[in-house]
Length: 226
Ligand code: ADP
Ligand code: MG
Image (tube, rainbow, N blue to C red):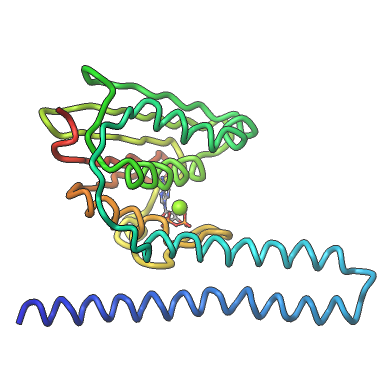
């Protein structure tokens, strides 16, 4: 009985997400078509239209990329020895232009004996990319992001704290809901993908936030510390 209920819950989640994807892709497609028609009628303005069209294409690309992470069949969990310091440096390098342009301060600390975790490297990387990206997007110019990695017994805890705009109670409750975004160019799929990957690793993700003060995200990975 329980498994039937779970199956139907899964199905309705899939239906909901598919409908959402179709809707989210249809909007930029409609815009693309409209601007192409406008461009044909007003060839002198084609460059402005191209810019809008590229933005719309980027949006569709972002939605498809996030969705593929969720749907990827490459699902086997590969536990490996991961140097967490290298993983975080690599991710910060990905965002270095944004960090430099907006003069953000990023501090990383490690409270553990050796900076190694036993975990699935691909999932860990994707989880941290999504959470760090959200933190960087939440802070104002000159904002701060603090990353603290520690081991408590066998459990690894990775805390990413920002002094950005924070989340209201209502927004906190909606985190992980497909397509929930407050950003103009957001997909609202990042946290859903992140939660799925954390649960693949039998871990947990917790959000603490105050509007105007910032947000603290903690990823807990049991038995990742030796
Ligand atoms: P997206 O980043 O594409 O909007 P996400 O699923 O990653 O989608 O995040 C959903 C929403 O959660 C964001 O639009 C934002 O409103 C909120 N959010 C997530 N992380 C933070 C954060 N660190 N600070 C403030 N708001 C956040
Ligand atoms: Mg995001």
